[in-house]
Length: 304
Image 1 (tube, rainbow, N blue to C red):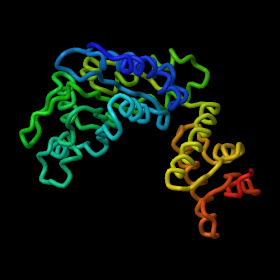
Image 2: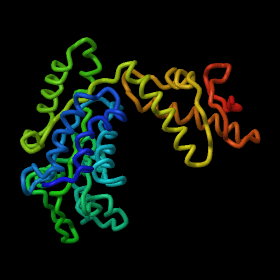
Image 3: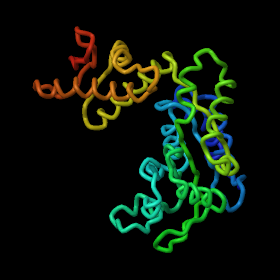
């Protein structure tokens, strides 16, 4: 496949863009990007998805976020079809997935929602019913499925991601082990719990590292900037002061749950401060800064 200069540069710089967003997972990103580059260059096996991944690791470390980000970068926004396997734990739910269940209003949640190109995300794959896994294996093998409406879907232009928390507890207990040791043990856990056919068909299995305190502090700074930017798009000009992130870290750091509590803390603290400002007659513009009690944030007049 011949690429233009812009396309070539975008693929070459993909690792740096992903690492700027996903913190603490540089080793995983390097491995994943290699396969993504193969897929975009047409260097994948004919008649199979562009690439298929098994993302292992504890909750809140970036497995889903990496999926969303590489898809948005390579294909476009809103091109991830996400299937939560906790909803497909019985054989009866297979009909919903394939579009044969008598729930026409929900068919679009299954494979019938797939068209064109994108990423198919199977969240918490260890919870899926064996018949659902049979369908997944067929998709990985031939990149084709027939839905209940007799539509033949072609997934040869798609990426497939399976996520799992298998090995998460082990990662949390291995405080001083080298990454290679942790990776080997978690992969062994996954191979014991998942069907061997899955490992025979996926392109790459990777293990996400636990986010340490420094990584979560970096994430907190990014979350504050992201939330202020999102509110800026709605017309509120908030300028965060440096100590704001410290309050978010104090409220949001969690050793076992990763970045999710930090994200929730950033959103809640900033939105609460903005809401109080608006309810007191403000216009939502000003400097975002810690309240004197140190447990919340305020919006004050920006310094000129």
